[in-house]
Amino acid sequence: MPEVLNVSAYLFTRLTDAAQLKPALRQRALAAGLRGTIILAEEGINLFLAGDADAVRGFIDGLRADARFAALTTTETWSDAQPFRKMLVKVKREIIRMDRPAIQPESGRAPAVAPATLRRWLDQGHDDAGREVVMLDTRNAFEVDLGGFAGALDWRIDRFTQFPDAIARHRDDLEDKTVVSYCTGGIRCEKAAIVLREEGVDAWQLDGGILAWFAEVGSDHYRGDCFVFDERYAVGSDLAPAVRDAEALA
Image (cartoon, rainbow, N blue to C red; front, side, top):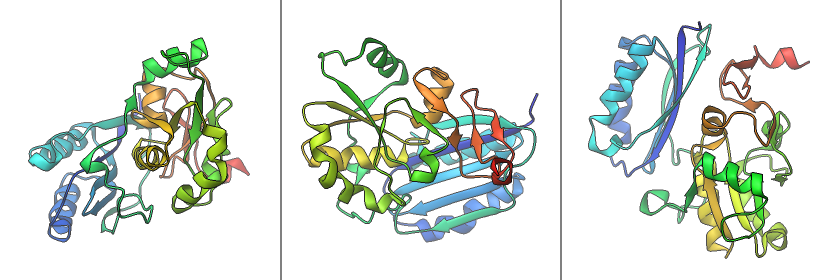
């Protein structure tokens, strides 16, 4: 049984004191023996942490004691070894960079579809209104190359800041369809769905992203593995490490 608990989580919530939070969170994480990365910005928090299960969950519970983080939900995976080398806390302009400051998910999300509902849609070939469902991968091309939903649209972007401009080039492919944007853990597709809806697309986001899909559904309708942002490099549909590191793919 793997002994290292890995969690990923994000929450769009207004933070006016990100710089002040940085040293306090780092000290608490180090005291708990955790490693990973926490990104803070005025728009919220994004984190990847690993360590002893009780320590990780205790840290998350401590975060939730702050009313601004009360709604934080995590996706858990396990590994035999610590996948992070350091404990980093960073303050940035955005917790996921899009360079569209008008996009503020904390002010209102695009509608989300649960993995179980989306599986039903994909199984039957349409949503509950009878509309064609199109899966749209919002990740970077190198991530998509490791795996994705069967038949999903892949716009071959190299960084997420290119996504809004890509909509204009591919808008006709989305006309009169139910578009479900997806990403690793939900953070990118949350912003992506808002931009899509502003462009008149009937867009939804896969709640919790690929990791939630693996946890609740497994490998149905998905081909390959999922890139993760640590030394595991990728996880399979069982949420276990698919390869040890990038060199294993050579």
